[in-house]
Amino acid sequence: MNMLDYAQNLPQWLVALLTEKFFNACIIHEDAKKNEKNVFCLDCCEGICPHCLSPHRSHRLLQIRRYVYHDVIRLGDANKLLDCAFVQSYTTNSAKVVFLNQRPQTRASRGSGNCCIICDRGLQDPFLFCSVSCKVQHILKTEGKLTKYIYRCEYMTLPEPGLDDGQMTPDTILEPIGSVRTESGSSGAAEEVGCRTVGCTATTEIVRKKRSTLSAFRSVFRPGCGPGSGISVSMMNRRKGTPQRSPLY
Image (cartoon, rainbow, N blue to C red; front, side, top):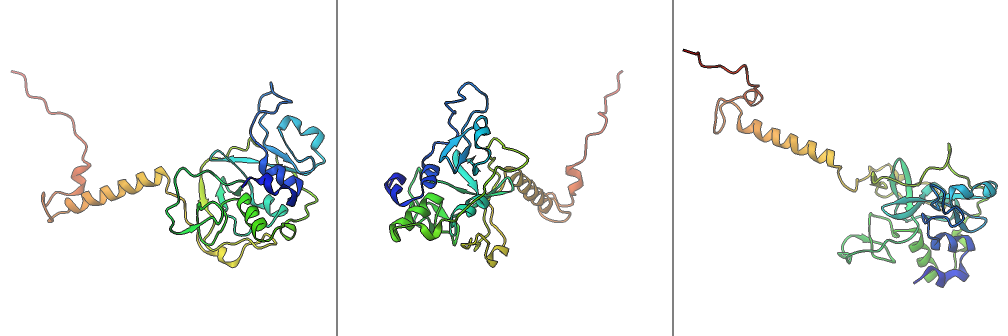
């Protein structure tokens, strides 16, 4: 289902937000540097670039960010606009974000664990939607309208000290298990539970491998145990001394 199929049941700004092609070059400032459209004007219902900001300064502005080649917005901003309960959020660069649209999957889901109700993308418990778009589609399919899920937001501005480029590095962890956003945007008590990381960093893996390797050597070369008994670990780390040369005759 395309979001345009639901256009008549959605606020105009939400249709524009979920269908706009962000991070394309602005046609008005085609020759300027940093002309990617990474701001959305909620009053004009259009994506704009940093060079377009001047006439929109008094409008409600939402910064769009890019993570793993897809558009995301800060969870704090999203919660001012609509109910994002049960939408999987991520913490990246110290900011909690949610995806605007579902991401294409290169292979089918394994069918185990928790999955998005709409697109079957794997999720962490207890989340039900991988993106804002998937939640919107589900509500429209089951209830027919979004009225009680849309919030009245009178003021929305860009973050201080200024607009960044919107590019986010993949330093990502999932939200805490059991953390569910309420309609007011606050987190439940389950947020106190520790969060799981998506994966260990390469540095952590290297450190772990080094430690496990060192432990193995210590057990093999421990004095009085196994082959090479009586050889201490210190001998492994002994540096070569000054080479001894044969005397000249």
